[in-house]
Image 1 (tube, one colour):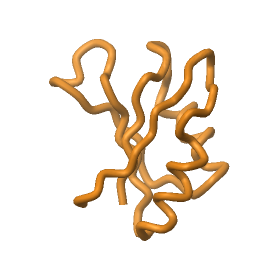
Image 2 (cartoon, helix red, strand yellow):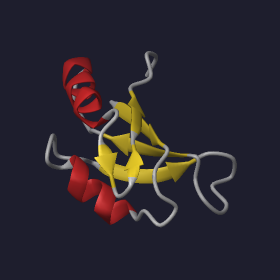
Image 3 (tube, rainbow, N blue to C red):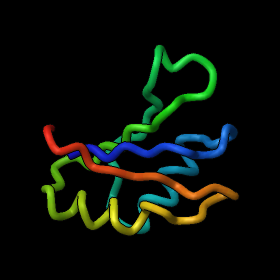
Image 4 (cartoon, helix red, strand yellow):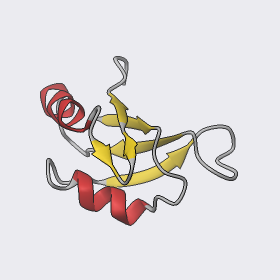
Length: 81
């Protein structure tokens, strides 16, 4: 299952994202995504491994709108995966 994050600070690192997200569920992988991922990524893709929709929605609800490093994080779980 995948969650997408946006509106993160420019200086965000995958390791700091994993640290924040691991509070809610063990994260499999975090990687930038967007147009060619050159420069600042538009979104970050978070892979939850074998998590089901219920877990993905729980993590998304906890993160969406959270104030992290001076920014309000936008998180959503795509319907079709």
